[in-house]
Length: 175
Image (cartoon, rainbow, N blue to C red):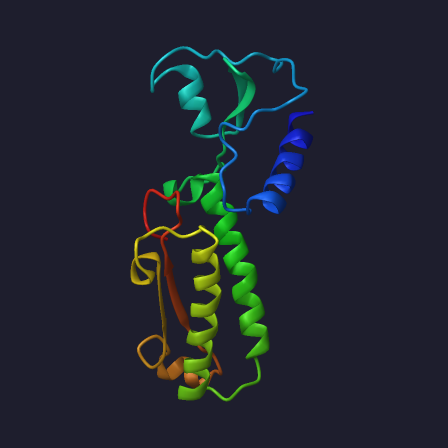
């Protein structure tokens, strides 16, 4: 089944190249032909192109059967690209771990500095792996954590707020 094939491709891609890398254009050895065969049409407004913007599509290419598109069904264009969506999921999992490590620390300047440092180290690692775009670190991501992101109400309720902005390597816009 196509969903099993896609799950296997995603797992192999995550291990070999990183979860944030797109699978679009990946050859599918052993796949003879998709059934049903998509109506490929021509041009950016053809039936296959319209469908490929919303679902992962498998189809024939001159070199064999390939994954024509690697997308999610998200209505938000920034989250639609499969690689960018998987990158954000990985970042959210890592952010939870950072938060869990700091859960009982006193809220204040020391915590904010530590959280900001942890997030910057995490994002530097993603940038070095090629997950984030931009020529400079400042182009790839920004992390804000401090009095400007944490209100008095947050302090009173034991919350700390971190604002993270990233530029995924294959994104259309900043998330």
